[in-house]
Image 1 (cartoon, rainbow over the protein chains, first blue to last red):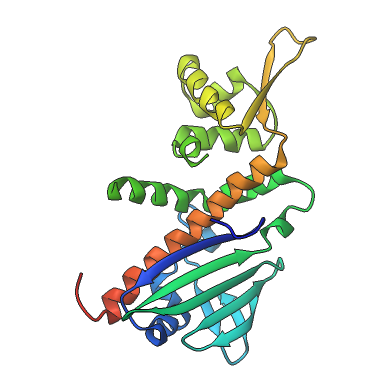
Image 2: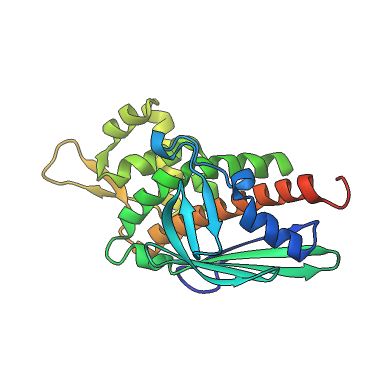
Length: 140
Length: 106
């Protein structure tokens, strides 16, 4: 659940240590970041990349965010072009790692019109949502 | 909220209404389902607070459906989408990390 309005949080426990989790998250998004199914042609094979030396987040080599915190094995924060912020924390959890992602400032995407936000959200995210619901059903 | 949005027909209805208010007939045509089925879906969407209906007195064709004007409801629905998006990405991340570097097979 969200910790304050305009933010969402997602958590997962991964069976690797926190240094490895951080490394896989930042160096191999091409292997885990899921392209948006049904997205327009140009986004179909979108590739996300975290470039530490230049502190940039790139999608298909276009800058889509600025990395503001890079604490290896602990914390990653970036701010996107719309000024929303994503923080990912990597916390040791026994021999595993709890990865918590918080996306903040989402209210900035809808200064005037919540309905347009719904449209925006549906266009971009309905495909993942479908998979998510399917997965939940299979789990239960 | 998530329950109301779990159905693909209802998600399509929300998409249609996102473009503006619609009459039942237009919605039924848009999603390609009979009026009786549409009525059930609209009822679920109305109970969840996502959709409201207004009677147009000067229009013989009557009721018009629209997304609920309550911005918080609309935004919450969207936040739920974003949350589901990131849960999905983290699930994929976990799968990849454990497959490629996992200490033990699950």
